[in-house]
Length: 180
Image (tube, rainbow, N blue to C red; front, top):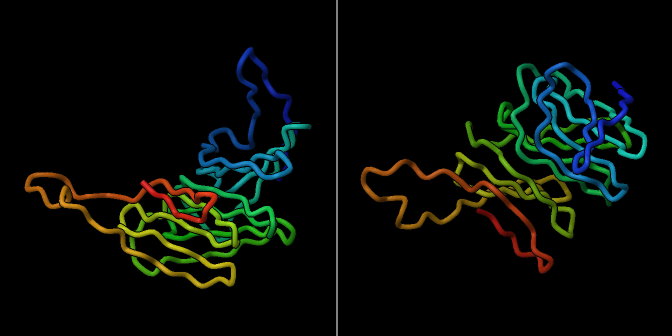
């Protein structure tokens, strides 16, 4: 769907309306054209905002119900693809902008809780599994690998809660994968 809105402008903030009365926008990223991509939880969709004209295009994820729980979205400008996490379906999704099509990359372990996503210089997609204790990679050819993170001694202290994470992820200009 498409929505054209007139932004509300204050001294420090420009606010754009999105489709739906309670769509719950969350994860956000921008592409090389300056368009802004974000997830819409209650619409189970992603959307693209063109700030130059206030137009928002919403792309509903097919055959999905409930709410999209996503904390990470990234744009691969070289491949014209948007990647995002989805805790509800335990998946990483890719959206081919040119074709208007989604592809689901299901994680093999239940309740992994994919959280953040980043793209390296080779077009490989990296993500964190908040409850899986792993980082993962989807190569530009589409194969998936998962890497358990080392657990430090603080995770074994009696009376403490279970360690969760990793959460955030970033790719350094030298290709090093950083995560929190």
